[in-house]
Image (cartoon, rainbow, N blue to C red; front, side, top):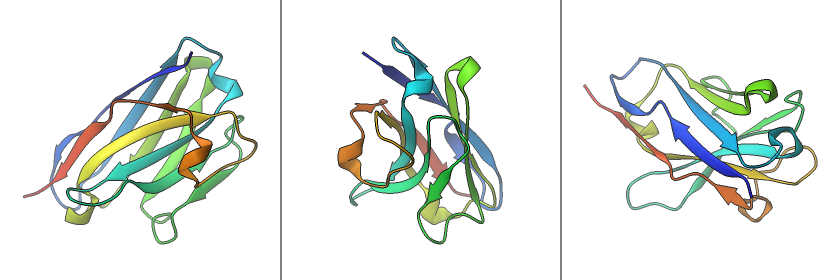
Length: 124
């Protein structure tokens, strides 16, 4: 059973940057595709980015690729989401998720394991 724990959220000023981390344990991290999702207040959970098992292929929600970057380090069983030039609309809870799918996926049903989420608040 894979467990995922996110970290790195917090309060950040508009235009700033942050890196979220997702640490996996309990199973072989490299056998899972990973993704990041976010949920803004009062809105549905939204796909942000996905990375395949080896980390070589990525997929992003259209429009986010210029500011978001997903990566992973399987030796550390950790996935990352780098966000630059943060904007108030980036505020929300960011979730790391994983699933045994091939390639990348933007479908919520592809992900069987979810972290508890980390809050990101963009405000001056």
